[in-house]
Amino acid sequence: MLSVKEFIPPQRRVLAFKEAIYERVDRLFIYLMFGYFGFGMLLAFFHDSWFTGFVMGGANLLVLFFLYYFQVTASVRRFILSLQMFVFVLQFILQTEGSFYAQFTFFFTMTVLIFYQNPRLLIPYFVAGIFYYGIGVFASYEGNTELQQYFIYKGEFSLQEALPPLLISTSQFAICVFFAHHLNKQTYENAKNAIYLEEQLNIESNLELAKQIAQGNLFEPYTPKPNDMMGHALLEMREKLKAIRKKDEENAWLSTGISQISSILLQSDDINILAEKLLNEIIKYLKLPYGALYVYNESDKEPHLILKAYYAPEHTEKLNQRFSLGEGLLGEAAKRLQIIFLEEVPPQFEFISSGLGKAKPQSILIIPLAAKQQLTGIIELASFRKFTPREIELLEKVSENIALNLISVQANEKTNKLLYEAQLTNVQLQAQEEQLRSNLAQQQQNQEELLRKQKRLEEAEARNKELIEKLQTMMREQQELLTANHREIELQQMRYRKLEIEIEHLKAKFEKKLEVLIGCLYTASIDEKGSILEIFGDSFSAIHYHHDEILRFGSFYPIIHPDDLEKVKKVYTQKSLNYQIKFRVIVPDGTAIIVQENGKFIEDNFGTLQRIAFLQPIKPSTK
Image (cartoon, rainbow, N blue to C red; front, top):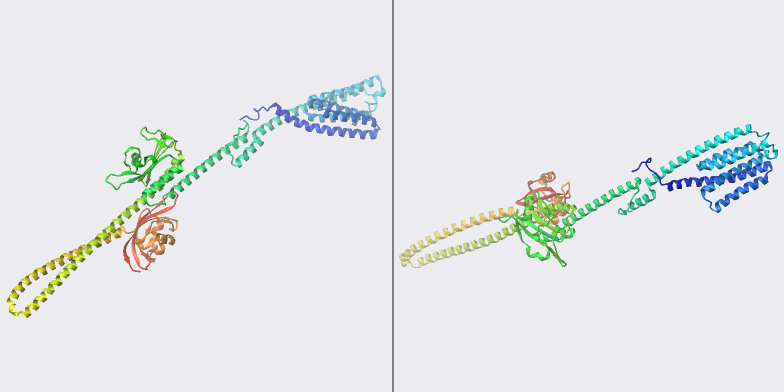
């Protein structure tokens, strides 16, 4: 940027600046001419010179009128105006017959002409003054008393007397020329500084630019002048505002995306439905033509990724496709838990088709879904354009939330599966118990029948004594048979008792297993005081409560036994990474049951504290 010294203002703008000053001086001289005309009338009153005052003064005003009426150029008009000033001075001298105070107006007028800052305007005025003194000297030398009275106030006007005024006039002329030149130079510097400052400020254009910035219009084209410091500053400010607006828009876009994707995570507990909704929301928000979501399965002998959702209608037959860890790009991303971003698509990658044809994607993005280095799945996306950093940032921010939700859903599915197996085992044990009870009843009936037979034999022995030997023989046989039967019954009873013990053992084992399995897995958003803001868990039937009741209480504190309340609050408020605690819960019928809770505290991406815990009853207690 040029400094003031280096700056050379345009000549036309300098002339315009000076012309504005000259126009004000023109108005000053117009007022001065009317003042001189009034002064001439005042002199006419005292010296009885009305004719001279009216004729010469009126002629001067008439010439001034014609100069402006015919629009004579300013430079010519000002030269004529300087001569008119001398005509007024001559008029005053003639009216006063050469009086000293009338001659003083000559010096006053020459001084006022300095305001035009043009030494050339002083020349005709000064020449007219010299001419006036020349006429006076000539009249005195020739002895023309009639002419001499108009130039000499008293006495003769000799060369010796004319020389001092001439020297004074010449000195004043030189001084006036010097100051006029100095003022002209100073005016040029003022014009230069004003033009330089005006170009720096460029007020009108910069005001318009500032209004556009205030109205939010940050993209209107604007080219500042080289010295326009204000314009450059406003442009720099506008660029910063653009950057701030862009950053705000990106942050709003990220927040909206995280909110919309996170809301999908709460809409289903079925992993297949959840995967499809989640992928559709990501595809819709990022406006992509292709996407796939794989879930990590480690329950089989060999852990693998299985395709659960696929956005590409022509390839729906690929659902349930599997990839092992380390296999291809997906397996590599899953193994390393690192994002893979390809801007050069491999040749083997399939074309994406639509109703208008097929095209190969320009970039591929593979995002591992992991929480605390625990892999839960993979999202694969493809686009006809390059993925932007903010899109990658959005996917990075939501990936951990998705991973945590997938862990929760998979845990719920495992818990439901184990509960179903436990219920099925319980039904089978009940059927076996019923069968054993039926066998025992049959054994009891057989024993009663044998007792009835023995009674009949005893009655027959009493009635038929003659057959006692035969009966004794028969009795011995029956006794042996009875003994054998008794032994069989005892053996059956022993078997029944053993079976009954086994049933009790299985029942105890089953009840112990139920104590482990029948519980409730829940996730709760809590505040700093431990109050529950939101809770996720379908049922709390293991402690005889429902999800809505716990949420209405705001915490577990209202249903915890008063003797255990401080112990539980201490654990909840410490917010340990992992904890295990036993305490009593008061169930709706007023009794208390002992429960055990295993859990931990984590923070999600929004800074909200989450408590993930498994609550299971251990044994009943009293009030």
